[in-house]
Length: 312
Image (cartoon, rainbow, N blue to C red; front, side, top):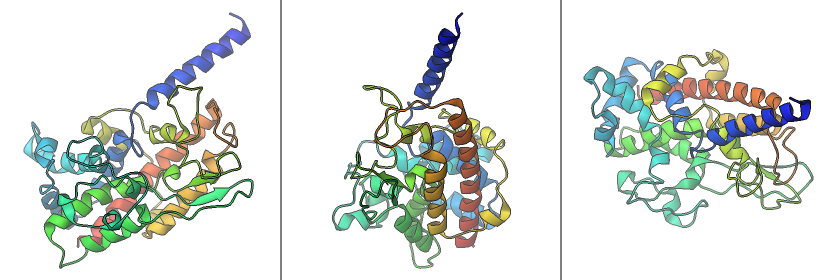
């Protein structure tokens, strides 16, 4: 086989891998969020464990989460699956898509499970940057940062109802993971994309009509799968987060970390300026997997820390 044909075959194999990785939609994907929750669950104190076990039983999907599950496994499986709830309601009947940008007074409300809005804009914060001096736009409010702060406050409030705390808990399980994904904390503004690239969603990794974007590539780095038990096992192979870094409990700092990682480890060659398409090489793939593993482990450790503190 000639060298050009070998290289072409290798490139096709890599593109096939990326295409398979991009099929699941989410922030990380469901598998990544379950891995983060699995890391956190192992670090919960007995008191926090009892609180979350009780609160999760108030979620309307709880019976589905624990069906056909042994009693001794229900608490962990419910906790791990609950981390995917905020994404799952995007496709569940009865929940309204109120857009990707906040609009009106209902965008920031916190009323519990009677709220049937999907609140997609709670999943991210578009901190802006530019490599060519394109004017920047401020992040919309509410966003992931404002909601994490709100939900943490509710969980620690003695006056909040358990029903509201349950709703805020499942959102918090998800959003802590979201903001550790670099492209959930950044948007690049360039001359070719003056309104921003929406966290890499407008950066293509293949020719149209392929639907493989930079954001989807990073979301799916943890791997595919829907089974919580597999995610739990995979989480055991994540590196242990540095204790000093995991002790940082300010969500603004978590977001700033992701923002800097986006600039230093996401928007790097072969990713150029503009909408692409670009083709991921093996060096970029290796860097991305390392960053993703570290962020997943760190998100899990920080999630456990804030639950242990707020649910004392």
